[in-house]
Image 1 (cartoon, one colour):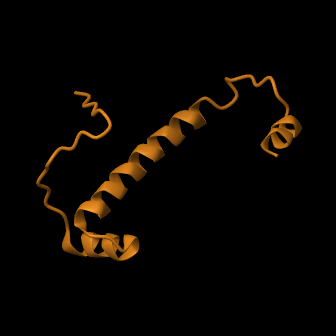
Image 2 (cartoon, rainbow, N blue to C red; image 1 turned 90 degrees about the vertical axis):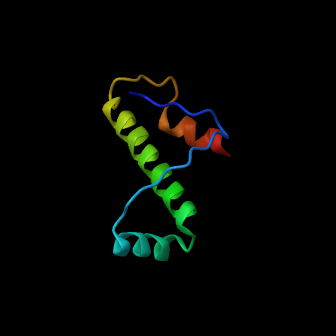
Amino acid sequence: MVLMLVMGDMRKITVEVDKADLLGAQDYTGQGISETVRAALKQLRSMQAQRRLVAMRGKVKFSMSLEELKYDRE
């Protein structure tokens, strides 16, 4: 089942987590429980997107060279 949420939609959940894991994650983020869980979920989505991009490596042809891309940044 795929759950797609529109930007701004929130879903309340109850999750049991290891206390040490949660405290360690909160210590790392410097945030509360909800913010820490949101950051972790966002990081997982980012990792998934990165994997998809890596899987595309060598399959996409670019019309600009690396030098042109660098120049385009300026």
